[in-house]
Every structure is written in structure tokens, then in C-alpha cells.
Length: 123
Image 1 (cartoon, helix red, strand yellow):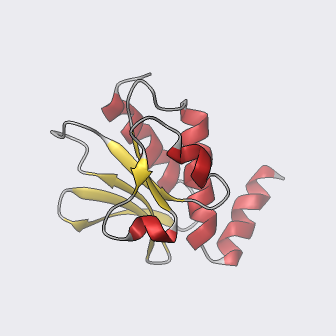
Image 2 (cartoon, rainbow, N blue to C red):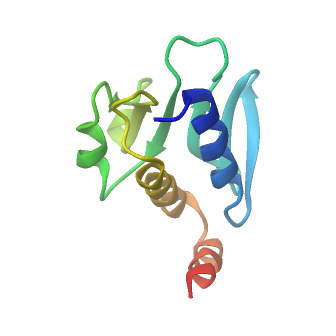
């Protein structure tokens, strides 16, 4: 796997490239990707942390994501709502799988018109 910090930057760039998506820092150095004011990916602080991870809100892929070594339901009660924290380690799935999970999370929180705009990109 690529450097976790580099992968984190690539995934953040991918997330904010979705229709209406943007990066925000609601807790200082912690990065999140939002759409219409709702978080769809937590990226954490990234730099200076022993483990870099992302957290995404999943439905269809939740079981699969929880099978990743060291992945777990996200804390603060978010796991009950489908959020999964996935560490970016050597055992992490390849970037295309992570991007799929980010897209699934986006689709769960984005307004229908923005999801339609995303679908139009693939048409």
C-alpha cells in the first residue's frame, strides 16, 4: 500500500470532487468531507497520528468493511448508524475499494439531485 498520508490526501481529493462536496474542519485539525452540510467521510487529523483512518457511513458494504483488519464501528455511537472506521494500513483494501465506500457514504447523505448529478458523470 502507498504511504497512508498520501493515500489519505488522495481519498480526500476524491471525496471533495463529488458534486456539492467540500472539505471542512469542524474540530480544528480534523478533516471531514461534507455535502449539503452533512458529513459523509471523516478523515481525522492525518498528520502526527499513530494510525491514519477514515470513517464512512455504509449500508450495503458495512459487513465487508468490518472484515478489514482493525476496522470497527465508529465511536461516539456513530457505529449504530452505520459508520465504520477503517485504518489505512498495509492490510487496507486497495484504493478503488476505499473510493467505492466513500461514494456509498456520499450517496447515503447527499440530496437526490446531487446523486443524480454524480450518476450523470458515469452515463
